[in-house]
Length: 107
Image 1 (cartoon, one colour):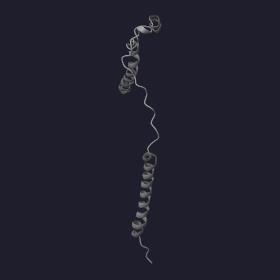
Image 2 (cartoon, rainbow, N blue to C red; image 1 turned 90 degrees about the horizontal axis):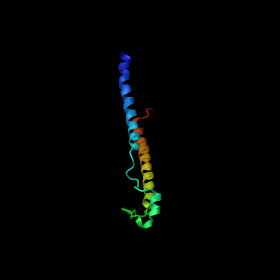
Image 3 (cartoon, rainbow, N blue to C red; image 1 turned 180 degrees about the vertical axis):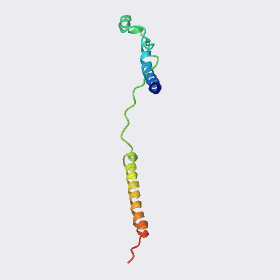
Image 4 (cartoon, rainbow, N blue to C red; image 1 turned 60 degrees about the vertical axis):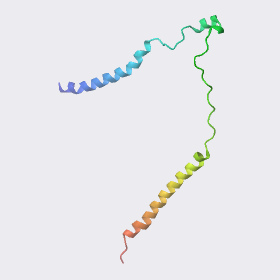
């Protein structure tokens, strides 16, 4: 009986995951409300005059952005390289000045 008690929570989790994965697929049987009421062949028979203008006009896409500013292209990588150099120099300077003075050679 003990192995069944261990499998019950696992089975519940598997069933819940399977159910949540199947829920979006179950909703696709409903008809699409956004589809036009008339078929394209019917609108061609009616003529262009019977088609109403679109409710929303979509503006043309904006032009692609131009080249990056010089700050992004040169200044930021330069500052990052300078920060790395400062960290390296500070670390080397610390070890040459502080750590060297900790130990003295006794003659």
